[in-house]
Length: 346
Image 1: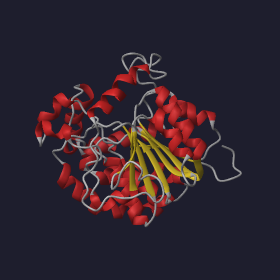
Image 2: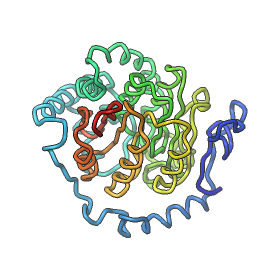
Image 3: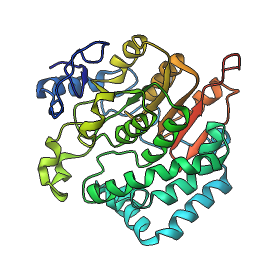
Image 4: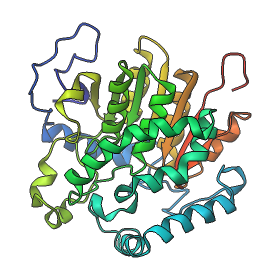
Protein backbone atom coordinates (compact mmCIF):
# COMPACT_ATOMS: atom_id res chain seq x y z
CA UNK A 1 0.00 0.00 0.00
CA UNK A 2 1.42 3.37 -0.94
CA UNK A 3 0.75 6.74 0.61
CA UNK A 4 -2.78 7.77 -0.25
CA UNK A 5 -6.27 8.25 1.08
CA UNK A 6 -8.31 5.71 2.95
CA UNK A 7 -11.79 6.19 4.29
CA UNK A 8 -11.81 4.36 7.60
CA UNK A 9 -15.07 2.74 6.70
CA UNK A 10 -14.01 2.04 3.13
CA UNK A 11 -11.17 1.66 0.66
CA UNK A 12 -8.54 3.81 -0.99
CA UNK A 13 -11.00 5.69 -3.21
CA UNK A 14 -13.54 6.38 -0.48
CA UNK A 15 -12.45 10.00 -0.12
CA UNK A 16 -14.15 10.81 -3.42
CA UNK A 17 -17.90 11.47 -3.67
CA UNK A 18 -19.83 8.32 -4.46
CA UNK A 19 -17.01 6.03 -3.38
CA UNK A 20 -17.92 2.68 -1.89
CA UNK A 21 -17.81 2.19 1.85
CA UNK A 22 -17.08 -1.00 3.71
CA UNK A 23 -19.85 -2.53 5.82
CA UNK A 24 -20.08 -1.68 9.53
CA UNK A 25 -17.57 -3.51 11.66
CA UNK A 26 -14.79 -3.33 9.09
CA UNK A 27 -11.31 -3.26 10.56
CA UNK A 28 -9.32 0.01 10.42
CA UNK A 29 -6.62 -0.07 7.75
CA UNK A 30 -3.19 -1.39 8.56
CA UNK A 31 -0.35 -0.01 6.52
CA UNK A 32 2.15 -2.12 4.62
CA UNK A 33 5.48 -1.87 6.52
CA UNK A 34 7.24 -1.30 3.21
CA UNK A 35 5.23 1.87 2.66
CA UNK A 36 6.04 3.06 6.17
CA UNK A 37 9.74 2.34 5.64
CA UNK A 38 9.77 4.32 2.41
CA UNK A 39 8.15 7.29 4.10
CA UNK A 40 10.49 7.20 7.09
CA UNK A 41 13.63 6.76 4.95
CA UNK A 42 12.85 9.90 2.99
CA UNK A 43 12.14 12.13 6.00
CA UNK A 44 15.70 13.49 6.41
CA UNK A 45 15.67 14.58 2.77
CA UNK A 46 12.59 16.78 3.06
CA UNK A 47 13.15 20.53 2.57
CA UNK A 48 13.95 22.44 5.74
CA UNK A 49 15.11 19.43 7.75
CA UNK A 50 18.63 18.35 8.54
CA UNK A 51 19.67 14.68 8.75
CA UNK A 52 18.68 14.55 12.42
CA UNK A 53 15.13 15.64 11.59
CA UNK A 54 15.54 19.01 13.37
CA UNK A 55 15.40 22.46 11.81
CA UNK A 56 18.98 23.70 11.66
CA UNK A 57 17.93 27.19 12.70
CA UNK A 58 16.30 25.90 15.88
CA UNK A 59 18.60 23.07 17.03
CA UNK A 60 15.88 21.83 19.33
CA UNK A 61 15.54 25.08 21.31
CA UNK A 62 12.10 26.48 22.14
CA UNK A 63 11.72 29.98 20.74
CA UNK A 64 9.31 32.46 22.28
CA UNK A 65 8.16 35.79 20.92
CA UNK A 66 5.98 37.02 23.78
CA UNK A 67 5.37 40.41 22.19
CA UNK A 68 3.11 38.85 19.58
CA UNK A 69 1.67 35.95 21.55
CA UNK A 70 -1.84 36.54 22.83
CA UNK A 71 -1.37 35.19 26.36
CA UNK A 72 -0.12 37.99 28.61
CA UNK A 73 2.35 37.30 31.44
CA UNK A 74 -0.45 37.86 33.96
CA UNK A 75 -2.71 35.36 32.16
CA UNK A 76 0.12 32.86 31.98
CA UNK A 77 0.80 33.19 35.72
CA UNK A 78 -2.89 32.76 36.58
CA UNK A 79 -3.21 29.72 34.36
CA UNK A 80 -0.16 28.00 35.87
CA UNK A 81 -1.27 28.86 39.39
CA UNK A 82 -4.74 27.47 38.73
CA UNK A 83 -3.41 24.17 37.45
CA UNK A 84 -0.78 23.71 40.13
CA UNK A 85 -3.15 24.62 42.95
CA UNK A 86 -5.58 21.99 41.74
CA UNK A 87 -3.06 19.19 41.22
CA UNK A 88 0.33 19.93 42.81
CA UNK A 89 1.43 16.29 43.11
CA UNK A 90 0.11 15.23 39.70
CA UNK A 91 1.76 18.16 37.92
CA UNK A 92 5.06 17.62 39.71
CA UNK A 93 5.08 13.95 38.79
CA UNK A 94 4.10 14.65 35.17
CA UNK A 95 6.80 17.26 34.72
CA UNK A 96 9.42 15.02 36.28
CA UNK A 97 8.61 11.99 34.12
CA UNK A 98 7.59 13.53 30.81
CA UNK A 99 9.03 17.03 30.47
CA UNK A 100 12.36 16.43 32.22
CA UNK A 101 12.68 12.64 31.92
CA UNK A 102 11.40 12.51 28.30
CA UNK A 103 9.50 9.31 29.03
CA UNK A 104 6.13 8.31 27.63
CA UNK A 105 3.26 8.66 30.12
CA UNK A 106 -0.24 7.27 30.29
CA UNK A 107 -3.29 9.43 29.64
CA UNK A 108 -4.13 9.24 33.32
CA UNK A 109 -0.77 10.73 34.28
CA UNK A 110 -1.56 14.00 32.49
CA UNK A 111 -3.47 16.53 34.63
CA UNK A 112 -5.27 17.92 31.57
CA UNK A 113 -6.77 14.51 30.89
CA UNK A 114 -7.66 13.87 34.52
CA UNK A 115 -9.35 17.24 34.98
CA UNK A 116 -11.09 18.53 31.81
CA UNK A 117 -13.14 21.00 33.86
CA UNK A 118 -10.00 22.94 34.81
CA UNK A 119 -8.78 22.72 31.21
CA UNK A 120 -12.00 24.46 30.17
CA UNK A 121 -11.75 27.00 32.96
CA UNK A 122 -8.27 28.20 31.98
CA UNK A 123 -9.11 28.27 28.24
CA UNK A 124 -12.64 29.67 28.44
CA UNK A 125 -11.95 33.38 27.98
CA UNK A 126 -9.20 33.20 25.31
CA UNK A 127 -11.20 30.64 23.34
CA UNK A 128 -14.33 32.78 23.43
CA UNK A 129 -12.26 35.80 22.38
CA UNK A 130 -10.84 33.92 19.40
CA UNK A 131 -14.28 32.66 18.40
CA UNK A 132 -15.79 36.13 18.68
CA UNK A 133 -18.44 35.18 21.23
CA UNK A 134 -19.12 35.83 24.92
CA UNK A 135 -17.63 33.25 27.32
CA UNK A 136 -21.08 32.45 28.69
CA UNK A 137 -22.10 31.24 25.23
CA UNK A 138 -19.51 28.47 25.49
CA UNK A 139 -20.77 27.14 28.81
CA UNK A 140 -23.77 25.09 27.58
CA UNK A 141 -21.60 23.52 24.87
CA UNK A 142 -18.94 22.62 27.41
CA UNK A 143 -21.59 20.68 29.35
CA UNK A 144 -21.94 18.39 26.31
CA UNK A 145 -18.37 17.22 26.87
CA UNK A 146 -18.96 15.74 30.32
CA UNK A 147 -20.23 12.28 29.31
CA UNK A 148 -17.54 11.96 26.65
CA UNK A 149 -14.64 12.91 28.92
CA UNK A 150 -15.98 10.67 31.70
CA UNK A 151 -16.11 7.69 29.34
CA UNK A 152 -12.62 8.36 28.00
CA UNK A 153 -11.22 8.77 31.53
CA UNK A 154 -12.41 5.27 32.39
CA UNK A 155 -11.32 3.81 29.04
CA UNK A 156 -7.85 5.32 28.61
CA UNK A 157 -6.38 6.00 32.05
CA UNK A 158 -3.54 3.46 31.68
CA UNK A 159 -3.09 3.69 27.92
CA UNK A 160 -0.04 5.56 26.53
CA UNK A 161 -0.68 9.13 25.39
CA UNK A 162 1.28 8.51 22.18
CA UNK A 163 1.55 12.19 21.33
CA UNK A 164 -2.13 12.98 21.93
CA UNK A 165 -3.12 16.65 22.00
CA UNK A 166 -4.47 16.95 25.53
CA UNK A 167 -6.43 20.11 24.75
CA UNK A 168 -8.53 18.07 22.28
CA UNK A 169 -11.79 18.76 24.20
CA UNK A 170 -11.34 22.40 23.17
CA UNK A 171 -11.39 21.32 19.52
CA UNK A 172 -14.88 19.96 20.17
CA UNK A 173 -15.99 23.39 21.35
CA UNK A 174 -14.47 25.08 18.29
CA UNK A 175 -16.23 22.72 15.89
CA UNK A 176 -19.55 23.08 17.68
CA UNK A 177 -19.42 26.88 17.52
CA UNK A 178 -18.16 27.26 13.94
CA UNK A 179 -20.01 24.17 12.60
CA UNK A 180 -17.51 23.45 9.79
CA UNK A 181 -18.62 21.19 6.98
CA UNK A 182 -15.03 20.16 6.23
CA UNK A 183 -12.17 19.81 8.75
CA UNK A 184 -8.60 18.86 7.89
CA UNK A 185 -6.04 17.87 10.52
CA UNK A 186 -2.43 16.78 10.20
CA UNK A 187 -1.15 14.18 12.64
CA UNK A 188 -3.22 11.13 13.61
CA UNK A 189 -1.49 8.70 16.00
CA UNK A 190 -4.17 7.14 18.24
CA UNK A 191 -6.89 9.46 16.94
CA UNK A 192 -7.54 11.33 20.19
CA UNK A 193 -8.05 14.70 18.49
CA UNK A 194 -10.02 13.07 15.69
CA UNK A 195 -12.33 11.52 18.29
CA UNK A 196 -13.34 14.90 19.68
CA UNK A 197 -13.66 16.53 16.26
CA UNK A 198 -15.83 13.69 14.99
CA UNK A 199 -18.00 13.78 18.10
CA UNK A 200 -18.63 17.47 17.37
CA UNK A 201 -19.49 16.80 13.72
CA UNK A 202 -21.85 14.04 14.79
CA UNK A 203 -23.55 16.41 17.22
CA UNK A 204 -23.76 19.05 14.47
CA UNK A 205 -25.41 16.51 12.19
CA UNK A 206 -23.10 17.24 9.28
CA UNK A 207 -19.47 17.50 8.26
CA UNK A 208 -16.44 15.38 7.38
CA UNK A 209 -12.94 15.12 8.82
CA UNK A 210 -9.85 14.48 6.70
CA UNK A 211 -6.74 13.42 8.64
CA UNK A 212 -3.22 13.29 7.21
CA UNK A 213 -0.63 11.28 9.11
CA UNK A 214 2.19 8.77 9.08
CA UNK A 215 1.28 5.11 9.58
CA UNK A 216 2.51 4.77 13.16
CA UNK A 217 1.70 5.84 16.69
CA UNK A 218 3.62 8.86 17.96
CA UNK A 219 5.56 7.08 20.68
CA UNK A 220 8.85 5.32 21.28
CA UNK A 221 8.22 1.57 20.76
CA UNK A 222 10.87 0.74 23.36
CA UNK A 223 8.62 2.18 26.06
CA UNK A 224 5.47 0.31 25.02
CA UNK A 225 5.97 -2.48 27.54
CA UNK A 226 5.34 -0.05 30.40
CA UNK A 227 1.62 0.24 29.58
CA UNK A 228 -1.52 -1.87 29.56
CA UNK A 229 -1.34 -4.11 26.52
CA UNK A 230 2.45 -4.17 26.61
CA UNK A 231 4.41 -4.09 23.40
CA UNK A 232 1.25 -4.90 21.44
CA UNK A 233 0.11 -1.27 21.71
CA UNK A 234 2.56 -0.36 18.94
CA UNK A 235 0.78 -2.79 16.61
CA UNK A 236 -2.50 -0.94 16.86
CA UNK A 237 -3.63 0.87 13.71
CA UNK A 238 -3.52 4.65 13.72
CA UNK A 239 -6.84 6.12 14.75
CA UNK A 240 -7.74 3.18 16.97
CA UNK A 241 -9.53 5.48 19.45
CA UNK A 242 -12.26 6.40 16.95
CA UNK A 243 -15.31 4.13 17.35
CA UNK A 244 -17.13 2.58 14.42
CA UNK A 245 -20.18 4.84 14.84
CA UNK A 246 -18.09 7.90 13.85
CA UNK A 247 -16.05 6.44 11.01
CA UNK A 248 -18.43 7.29 8.16
CA UNK A 249 -17.44 10.94 8.68
CA UNK A 250 -13.69 10.23 8.60
CA UNK A 251 -11.13 9.84 5.81
CA UNK A 252 -7.49 9.25 6.61
CA UNK A 253 -4.69 10.07 4.16
CA UNK A 254 -1.51 8.11 4.88
CA UNK A 255 1.69 10.02 4.22
CA UNK A 256 3.35 13.40 4.77
CA UNK A 257 1.49 16.68 4.78
CA UNK A 258 3.99 18.29 2.42
CA UNK A 259 3.02 15.65 -0.16
CA UNK A 260 -0.71 15.34 0.53
CA UNK A 261 -2.07 18.59 1.98
CA UNK A 262 -2.16 20.78 -1.12
CA UNK A 263 -3.74 18.14 -3.42
CA UNK A 264 -6.31 17.34 -0.75
CA UNK A 265 -7.32 20.97 -0.26
CA UNK A 266 -7.47 21.62 -3.99
CA UNK A 267 -9.84 18.69 -4.41
CA UNK A 268 -12.32 19.72 -1.70
CA UNK A 269 -15.83 20.53 -2.95
CA UNK A 270 -15.96 23.75 -0.89
CA UNK A 271 -13.64 25.96 1.21
CA UNK A 272 -12.14 24.51 4.35
CA UNK A 273 -14.05 25.20 7.55
CA UNK A 274 -11.38 24.30 10.11
CA UNK A 275 -7.73 23.23 10.04
CA UNK A 276 -5.55 21.74 12.78
CA UNK A 277 -1.78 21.37 12.65
CA UNK A 278 -0.52 18.59 14.88
CA UNK A 279 2.09 16.86 12.74
CA UNK A 280 5.83 17.60 12.72
CA UNK A 281 6.42 20.58 15.03
CA UNK A 282 9.28 22.10 13.09
CA UNK A 283 9.42 25.47 11.41
CA UNK A 284 9.37 24.31 7.78
CA UNK A 285 6.39 21.99 8.27
CA UNK A 286 4.41 24.39 10.45
CA UNK A 287 4.92 27.39 8.17
CA UNK A 288 4.01 25.33 5.11
CA UNK A 289 0.83 23.96 6.67
CA UNK A 290 -0.34 27.36 7.96
CA UNK A 291 0.27 29.03 4.61
CA UNK A 292 -1.36 26.25 2.60
CA UNK A 293 -4.41 25.82 4.81
CA UNK A 294 -5.01 29.57 5.11
CA UNK A 295 -5.24 29.90 1.32
CA UNK A 296 -8.14 27.43 1.31
CA UNK A 297 -9.87 28.50 4.54
CA UNK A 298 -13.40 29.88 4.32
CA UNK A 299 -14.27 33.28 5.73
CA UNK A 300 -14.99 32.72 9.41
CA UNK A 301 -13.07 29.43 9.37
CA UNK A 302 -10.58 28.42 12.07
CA UNK A 303 -6.88 27.67 11.87
CA UNK A 304 -5.59 25.92 14.99
CA UNK A 305 -2.14 24.65 15.87
CA UNK A 306 -0.58 22.57 18.60
CA UNK A 307 2.87 23.40 20.02
CA UNK A 308 2.86 27.02 18.87
CA UNK A 309 5.94 27.74 21.02
CA UNK A 310 8.27 25.23 19.38
CA UNK A 311 9.30 27.57 16.54
CA UNK A 312 8.73 31.03 15.11
CA UNK A 313 6.18 29.75 12.60
CA UNK A 314 3.00 30.70 14.52
CA UNK A 315 3.92 34.26 15.57
CA UNK A 316 5.39 34.93 12.13
CA UNK A 317 2.15 33.75 10.54
CA UNK A 318 0.10 36.07 12.74
CA UNK A 319 2.39 38.99 11.94
CA UNK A 320 2.30 38.35 8.19
CA UNK A 321 -1.49 38.32 8.11
CA UNK A 322 -2.11 41.18 10.54
CA UNK A 323 -4.52 42.64 11.28
CA UNK A 324 -6.45 39.54 12.27
CA UNK A 325 -9.24 38.95 14.77
CA UNK A 326 -7.89 38.17 18.26
CA UNK A 327 -6.14 34.82 18.36
CA UNK A 328 -6.43 32.49 21.31
CA UNK A 329 -3.50 30.89 23.13
CA UNK A 330 -5.24 28.05 24.91
CA UNK A 331 -3.58 26.44 27.91
CA UNK A 332 -0.11 27.47 26.73
CA UNK A 333 0.54 25.64 23.47
CA UNK A 334 -2.69 25.40 21.46
CA UNK A 335 -3.23 28.43 19.23
CA UNK A 336 -6.32 29.31 17.22
CA UNK A 337 -7.24 32.21 14.95
CA UNK A 338 -10.36 32.85 12.88
CA UNK A 339 -10.21 34.03 9.29
CA UNK A 340 -11.87 37.43 8.89
CA UNK A 341 -15.21 37.76 7.19
CA UNK A 342 -15.34 38.58 3.47
CA UNK A 343 -14.10 42.10 2.86
CA UNK A 344 -12.02 42.27 6.04
CA UNK A 345 -8.22 42.43 5.76
CA UNK A 346 -6.40 39.08 5.91
